[in-house]
Image (cartoon, rainbow, N blue to C red; front, side):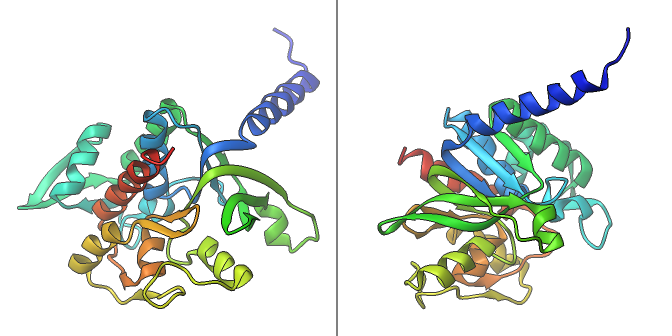
Length: 257
């Protein structure tokens, strides 16, 4: 078979353009493809919602790839194990209540399951702003991550969704945009981003699920961003709370669509 480089190029341009056009409007748009974002995408797609996820890096998975200090094993508690089992991610008990899984298997399985359930993932795209209508956020303003990294003056484009999910991790970048640009009160105890506290795995694991909720009309927070926005300790390389947070935010939003 002869190969034609122009046909290869056409195939990429046409199929990508169709995908992007199909997701200019969605039920839910997620910023951040870490474990919480991927879990949220999976459960929303499984609930037959139209969901799109934007990840600024080349690869999804967030910090889960590296486990702890690049030792690519992850730990989950008993509740988190239930999600690993549901996804078919192999794990074993290390000590009572502590379960270990391979980080690479965990990330690749989460991503594959989310996409096969119907979620659409776009990598190398950064959220640089939000769209606003009256007193509610209604979309993400996007640009290529390479444009952002090169500090080029290139205007972004907008996608729209019924609900947004802030899952950008420790920096909680979308929440910071909303707070800075709208100059309004968030649904936190201070009215602003409370901030992440030092490491305390036990408290942080519980807090991340509790803090998974709407922080501004139309915008929910999940994953480590939840503890950054509402206030709570970081947990380190234990990921059950991340997975449970992703499932919870999907359930909360699904009930409202």
